[in-house]
Image (cartoon, rainbow, N blue to C red; front, side, top):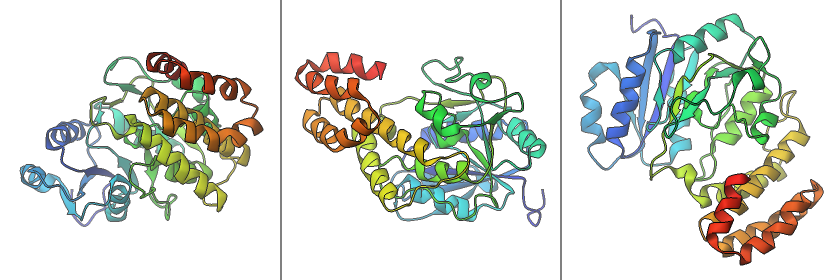
Length: 315
């Protein structure tokens, strides 16, 4: 591929101090059946041997280095560096199956009005089981009519940025949140959903979200800080609205996140933070008539942590 001709896809991978996981992620990229892509790795200030490990990939990988700013800032830098018509995001700890890019590019070519497309994905603990049924969330044409509602109802079509491919021009100006450890995906995805149709490509699992001890999204404060950030963003009109992101759905999503954050604090045994979240959320949950949650949570605060964990799994 000539360096003067932009690739069809720019693969953007933010990384920080996880060279073993990064190598595996890169191998999954270079195993793709679709080949017209560039790879941009944003090294977000790694302090280990990540730079040396990246050099071993030679000119197959374009490396951009910056002072540590967090995953949102690293994704934004990678998007700015991208040259492809489409941008496909991959976190350094996730994996793609070989047909992932081919399915997404083919979908976008068949649906030029779409802003972006996801794929069915699985968790590494059950790699053969898709986290959602594509037939339940999308129509026969693969278009997801209400992506935010699906998210609220437990079928998140883009729970991780590693499954998303989007049209770079249609997404121009959209940014990931840069507050560290604060659900940085939502701001970008809401903006993307608001700009046009969003689809699902592929019938089977095409990406793997890896579960491991350092998953940031498994930490209670990730949801708690994210909730506070998004509530403040919503209050100043900073969350997108459009045909696929109604104000009602946006509020319902934040209320859903509020319940998740409160329960995650209980799961982690952080009862003080859980109580503070509950008190801040009470007016929102009352407005949305989540009376069962409002009545049950004070009881759970007094219950053993194992009981709270069982309830969190059901929420």
